[in-house]
Image 1 (tube, rainbow, N blue to C red):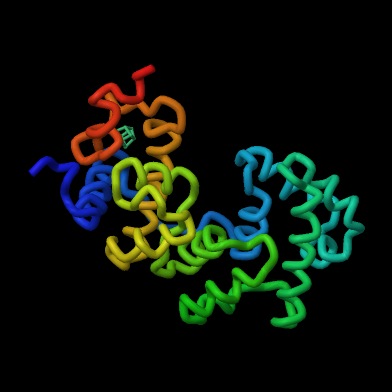
Image 2: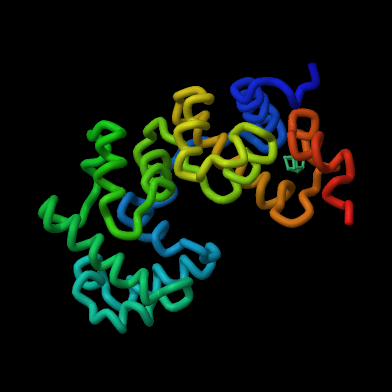
Length: 235
Ligand code: SF4
């Protein structure tokens, strides 16, 4: 049987193994504290990393701490994070998030998520305005080493092209479908996420993916069904 016709479950494992070889296996260490991760991930929506960081540090410098940010005049906060996309939408969402956390927990701290069951933690986080499944799973995997899989635009695109998920699957549904096919180990899931993200940025790019350089060619539906037959070049 051609490798690209294998069941999606087998291709998911093959994808994971091939990308582990292609890119080095990473350790799972939190890159920033949980509150920083949460708010920076909210800032990062449709914004590059440099502009997200600039917004975060400008906001901290101007208002001092989470309390200061929560109480800042809305226009001033929007101005501080103006390097991000849609600052006028993100500023009230950040303030609402901080208020919600303070009201429910008595302090602006989300370390308690470490001891909360995964489903409950996802439900708790996704009640916060501006926090979707991608942000919630990213925080729970990166900071609390919970066995979940964040699916961003790159993970989604590569998974769909290779054929791990169907063409009609939404990004939200893809979180669970892909998770069900992978080992429930946070380090494995972290590497799967990071490697697909890197592959999507560098090789399987949105426009003209560099299939000739890709280690997933032989199992990839897009390559076998479209690219190799020249369909994407047909007028
Ligand atoms: S073969 Fe092409 S379409 Fe398939 S994963 Fe690789 S780069 Fe993407």
